[in-house]
Amino acid sequence: MSAIGLGLDTTFDDTSVAILRGKREVLSNLTLSQYQDHEEFGGVVPERASRKHLEVINQLIAVALKEAQLDFSKIDYIAVSNHPGLLGSLLVGLTVAKSLAYTLQCPLIGVNHVEAHPYANVLTHGEMPFPVLHLVVAGGHTLLIKAKTHFDYKIIGRSLDDAAGECVDKVAKMYGHPMPGGPVVDRAALGFSGDTYDFPRPLLHKNGHNFSFSGLKTAMLRFREKYLENPSTSVNNGKQLPEEGPVLASFFQSVIDVLIHKTFKAAETHGLKNISVSGGLAASRKLRSAFEAEAARKGINLFYP
Image 1 (cartoon, rainbow, N blue to C red):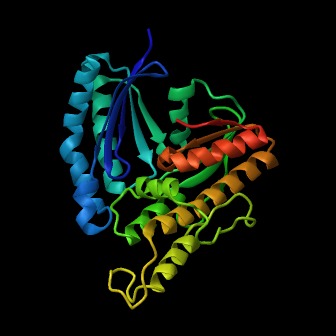
Image 2 (cartoon, helix red, strand yellow):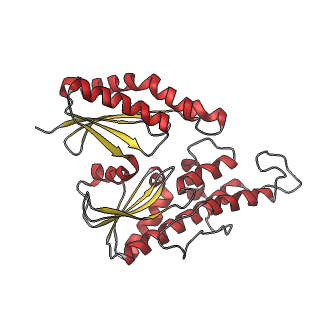
Image 3 (cartoon, one colour):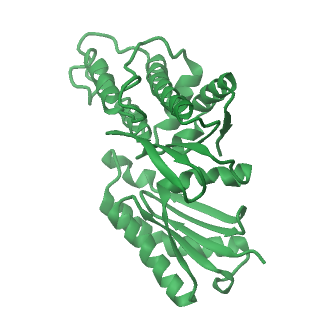
């Protein structure tokens, strides 16, 4: 009989609980977001995030068990994200997970949640073919991981400063949008041309497989400064601020161009024919469409959740 696991994730500002049977049968998958709790502060407040996790996690576990029509006696192991993330938030999930594992006398499995991102593809596609190049484009991390097997892998590229998702969130915030900024920017990219403005493509042909997006973020800030005396306000200095849609579409095209060039160049360099894309930014329809076109052009097998 397949093992049943209870998974907990409190790495940042979402409290997530899932129950899995075997490798791919999701019996319950619940997430409680805190975006509205932090909106007034313009970003996530770590202490507030950990306190919110503490308030809701036990109730969320109870709801997940009810949805899966199980009780604790049926749980065979506990899995919990133990790094990276906000320290206080991580401690909430870890403390609950350790307590449950001790009480139930079952195994406790610590998970690096960034390295686990690619495994969302397993739920969609089943076993992934190896070797494979994983691109992780999450809110706080941009990574390229070369994997020969499940346990034989190496990070061959990473963001040297801001991650792609973080850059997208911050640029969306410049235009007054709440977190997450990805959906707003994606809609703009789908609705407008991405070549209206020519924004930088940082490290496009430099520094191997590594990424950098802080310069692009700064370029967007400087672009707004041309039109606003104070880029954090809407006080006009006499120039009309360009329409938001084409600006965000052109910005996102810069992000996509960098991700595509670096990813497919890494695949070519390492002789890899399989690429997976995962993380929050992988939900972007514009990004997926661009990756699909490039994969088809180069004969690469592409996977995303």
